[in-house]
Image 1: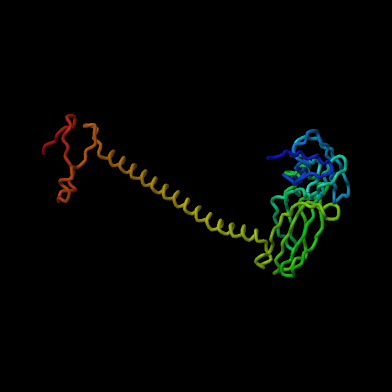
Image 2 (image 1 turned 120 degrees about the vertical axis):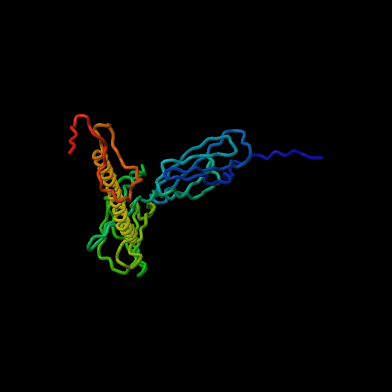
Length: 294
């Protein structure tokens, strides 16, 4: 035997299983379940969003008959901290959670240029990849001295470079650049970090690597140039020898040319080494030349 029991819905219960599905820079997707299964009518929820940094509140109304409800909270700020409360519209018991939005990205292409008595930090504008960043907000720069184990705030700027002076030789420094923190340093961007003087030589490590690459190039380039010059000279010598041999053969052929026969006459080589090598070759007599007999 069995009996079917239907529970009376209690609208004073809180929403169940409130959690965050996805969080971005300016939005957050939250999800929860109704206080009881299979609601038979639309349920009105109140979603309160408290900004823990700005100390402001916003309330949104959500109506749904589904057992599972998904809602997107918009117009949040990057790097913000929020307290979210969900309850039925009759102010029943509540469910709550905290959300931290994704901060702004770190600036790209941070590099160091070493001058005589100072260094310059350079980076790309964050507005190139962050639509939520305004250059008027600016950047703030921090420095960490690993030898002294001290972190110092160097200042802020609205430019894309920053001058740093009074560095000590032999110290290792780490510089970080990020979007300037707002409201008491609670809403900051991700920092871009770069090591300086990690070898204790007073030079930027990246500059050392580029210097090594430059030294290699200074050796390889002259060697390649000499090889090209040598190959060029070799081609010129071969060409000149070819031309000289061609000219010598032409002159030799012209000197043995017979106008009567219309061709050049060369020795067969059988008489080479004979004693009469220097005797002139008799090729015949011409009809128009008189013969004189003594």
